[in-house]
Image (cartoon, rainbow, N blue to C red):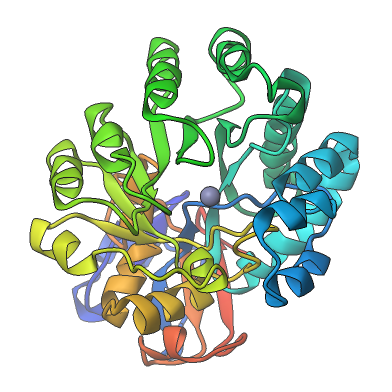
Length: 375
Ligand SMILES: [Zn+2]
């Protein structure tokens, strides 16, 4: 493999290396038989948040229903309160601990959503913190505005006013800080009609959309995402065959999030067989978040996608490389080893591709290359 600047320019057998590349190379490295994959891409995370909800787990384990957990000060509202109270420095510090875990497991690109601020000021704060992480570590960061994550407490009696606030104030102000707009379309979150209005506002500002779709019920989220040409629809446990077919036709990537499925002990799996038959590209992500997917490892996400959802190991690896890049609208630049792609790599201390997914915990170890630079 040869790279110039931050791009891969050649791949092949050493004996076929063009003489000019061999002559001009100022650095030559021998991978010593190690497996090289594209750097892993986590295309769905909620990495930036305040507080800690590990205490809630005890309540959940004892069978406490959601409203009891919320009354005990838990649930998403507690993360919103802690995130609003946190300074940018505090949020950066706590996010870096999780980011470092993702990077140690081979990630070179991480998508990060807002969605725990739920006010103009706090959503922009989250996006700034997320973007700022790229200055702290060698990693590519993509940001997604998720103001439509839940209705904040102060708007509980007038949710239409909050949707208007997203459309008229938060989306316009996020231009330049966000790469996409996301929403949680679900019976416990935003309706398809509200989601549609939010997506129309995103489109008016030239922002692509993504959707938390059909996780707990079939809300028609897959078809709704497809009708806006969404980059991705994520979760999809309850997505209908028609909705998935619409996604395939629209070029929308299906993002599978086995961490949340596992932690919530969901009874229904995403319809992977239907996705396969449709040729729908499947990505796999950590969904790293404090409430439903306390997981900061793409390798564990891949392992769960294989063991719980029945993906083949090579499908799981495509899910955190090629298809994850598609889910971020970066399919032409990232996630593949090919001339013209960014030279983002993971070098694994194994020559067995399956070993990257098979082992639980941080084995085999890996070294990352981002934009041609070893980090
Ligand atoms: Zn999510």
